[in-house]
Length: 168
Image (cartoon, rainbow, N blue to C red; front, side, top):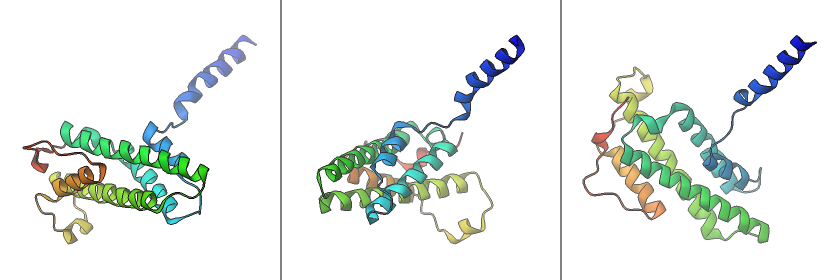
């Protein structure tokens, strides 16, 4: 009987490690999405998938601290905008400017992560036939991160560049 109790207690204690828990940004995005309602919901769903993939790939650990902080500020800004959108929907229809801003924010984050993935893959010389089709300018990642700064209203620190990115 005691052996069975110990086994059950051990199983219950380990269940917490098996359940994946989203970070606060992904949670905010998930709660802002209303299934099948509007195109903005599709954009938020894409953003949620992108955020989860980026977390699994541990992208923030593979770039310099400044770039990581700028990208994280953009994600936090999108999460706040998603919460505002959800609150506006509870009061009635969300304003058009808000949905347009969410969609442009998601598009900017998507482009930035695509450039980041391509930059990291090319820096470690990953053999991928799709990369052969992509011509990666040396400043393309920095341009996308600057676009994120424009979307979120942040400004880049002087002297920052995409060349500071290093793969760990």
